[in-house]
Image (cartoon, rainbow over all chains, first blue to last red; front, side):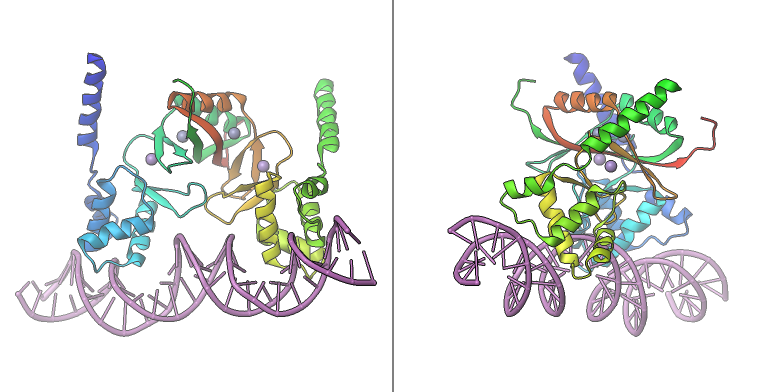
Length: 156
Length: 156
DNA sequence: ATGCAAATGCAAATGATTTGCAAAAAGAAA
DNA sequence: TTTCTTTTTGCAAATCATTTGCATTTGCAT
Ligand SMILES: [Mn+2]
Ligand SMILES: [Mn+2]
Ligand SMILES: [Zn+2]
Ligand SMILES: [Zn+2]
């Protein structure tokens, strides 16, 4: 348990250090202007743990500056996606939902009752995917693994 | 190689036998009327190997009966999906694409250049998914695994 | 054949996202 | 700072996939 606590702290530290990649620098480097709406949207993205959709981002944004438009949110998401700064998800078949792309790769488990999104990572699965693709004569560019589940009644 | 050919034949036989589950019977059982549009759409679905979207199904349908409407295609897809007769996919983020649900479960590898969809199946991955979900306290209701790849230059 | 609920076609509505365009803001230069 | 050029924005209208309201047709049990 002490060990467990130790790792939790390490994780938090990594998080704190890793947290906000300097997107503004990256944007400049890409010859893109750093505007007020973009700064606000980036802040929202880098400071949230969840996977908000454009509308949710928009609402959080107008809280800070009510002149921001939904189009700008969409345009910014497209821009950031092309830059590789964010990932776009289409859980279920709903509207696109986003998250910043900084950490290590992970996949998602969606609680079908609550809509909660839980992140997980499995090296084994990633490896198997590679093997399968290779056997079929392909290189994987990206992939998408989503588990849709319900809290189990069984004891853990 | 002889053995390989043998199994190919077995697979074809299974296919031929398995091919068209009696959807009309199933529909009746569900208290649903078996209409001309539905019969045509079912035929299209059961006799194709690919994963067509509503528009493609619509076009194939009006070839047989030009009075069929796109709304009916959509309504029928929803109906069949609820009955569990077909599966709906949202590759990339494009329009829904469908396939009949008869065979064993499989996942998809999408060729990012050509759009080709290749089916594959991995018991190992399925098992791992279960394990992961269980470890997180969940039961999987369904899942979605899509590999997006490009034909590899490397020798196989 | 008759009757009635269920299904259809068509057009209009929806929801998510994109786009055209005139006005505003960013950043380089002066 | 002021000026100038280019990018970005907000807004409204357009697009795309899908759904829905409603009058009409159809399936099918009687
Ligand atoms: Mn995530
Ligand atoms: Mn398939
Ligand atoms: Zn993964
Ligand atoms: Zn699977």
